[in-house]
Length: 484
Image (cartoon, rainbow, N blue to C red; front, side, top):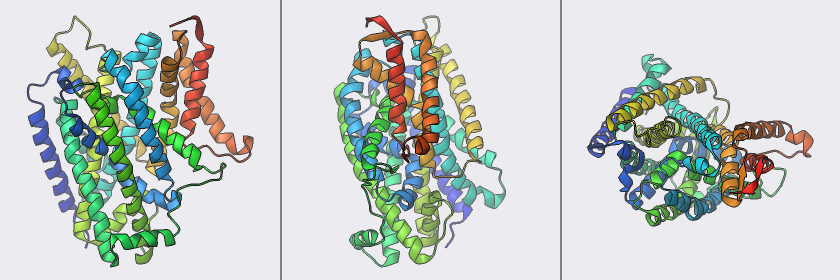
């Protein structure tokens, strides 16, 4: 039975209302320090649990299950790489951030290299997070458009405006303190949606969950390790790509680190990271398992889908109205952590890294808050425009786009932080922006010509590592004679 648009909209409104209640409670007596750091009072276990939803987002919820069709279980090798990446963050980056007492993690580049390096790092984060968050939000908004707003002939831009307005209202005052608690709620609903979806599918197939395991193997979609080094999913480069993707997209990302830096101290932040990373491995496997049984169900029931991103909603809505409702609750739960976290971190980075409102002695607290509000609304407008642009880009799985973008925009950050942490050299600061732009350009050229130039080799997510290495090399060539 088809889920009626009014039911989906009612769920969306009810869920948003619940978030507003939490936002209202957590934003009481909030200040700029509350918005930026949560007054360093966030319980580590709440942060760890909430970060599961923030790390997965609507991209994982929609794209990873469908991705099984093209890549089988090879994504788990990337996830294992994630685990090692989180260890690096906990043992190397978090101690640095806490020792320097950073609010914006890009302030480190100012202390280590200078003004231009600092602004370049912050600018690349803003570019990366704006593109990534826009893609994630677009995915969810597009589903709402298809199943709700198209039925009432509501234009796509109205849908986008509604979604972003809700995010702005819920995060405008409380910032990171609000997000820490709303992420917990959203993680719960998202994981519950996955578990219930697996249950509904197995029930409809007349199988237990354990009976589905040999069916996945028989379907030929359980391969995890690709051993051909030419292959885009070659397991070694998958592992190291996952490791470095985590380091840059979590450890060098203001959104994710802002949550960790809201903990009471370094020890609690590290406990959060170790706990969260272990749980995340299991959760990602659960998503791949869901993807596999979605494919089996679709084949047995003759359900067709044009894009792998359509697999989950197509199957969920064909099962029953209740399964469809569960899907939409999960999707909405997955969407909000990406949106509210991105908006808050982008506001934080621009306010501190470019406007300097935190350390400007000439600004009163009320003036700082006013400036932050203006930045917050301006960022929302930028996200609105980006989502409208992405509305025309539906040619491949969104998660693939996200990681491709990350390979180009996070690579320079990887190279800059690696050079700062593992060498003692100073650099010619004013030339750093040129290196940061040239590295992605060179990577793009190599990626487009790798098959012809490198005996059939195809770049995958390891493009991020190459990008960082080229940035590192460029900084080495720009080093000063004396050391830091």
